[in-house]
Image (tube, rainbow, N blue to C red; front, side, top):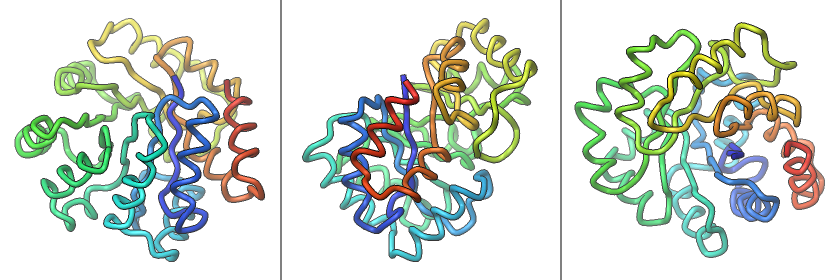
Amino acid sequence: MLSVYYTAGFPTLTATIPIAQHLEKAGVDIIEIGIPFSDPIADGPTIQESNKIALDNGMNLHLLLEQVQEIRKSVSLPIILMGYLNPVLQFGFEKFVKEAAKVGVDGLILPDLPLDEYLLGYKKIVDEIGLTNTLLISPTTSEERIRKIDAASNGFIYAVSSSSTTGVQQGFSTEQESYFKRLQDMELVNPFLIGFGVSNHETFAAVSKYSLGAIVGSAFISLLKSSTDLKSDITRFIKGLR
């Protein structure tokens, strides 16, 4: 399974819609649309830059939801909105979840939403409105916490491949592959997708041996930045990953 992330409003304000359309036609399984934020601390320079450009272009949550509604007229793939908690809280958490569901969003990824706070104050809202909320784990996450996250999940788990920021890397270390194998052996209730460092066919194939599939972000953002023909470049990129 292949999930592809890109930042809403990048490289141009209106590119959000055609990128989603091209990704579906290219054979992607899940679309993750990033909510631009001024301080994306978990992201490397590539995604940080895309956030800044998107914000400079005028992207905001209200416009993003309008664009998702437009995307839904032609795209049937699952759509996940991924972003930091601050813009969502400013919008109003319950209002955001309701509006997101109304325009056709299927799930959320809010990496800086603490697990305990989610379980105490937000999970009920998300569940009642019918969205999935994807939680993250990393190589330093204890088995106890992984089991707790698995129990709180209703879609897939985002397994971060390393404790660094997002970005392209050259393959995976023996230590990382041991982590992937440990997750595989845990026989979790929910499947997991591996992200951070998946950028080409070799890295996609490597993580797919252990997981349901992969999440690709920085490498795709780099492609968008340099693309002169979104349709053909996206199609070539996705076929190359597969």
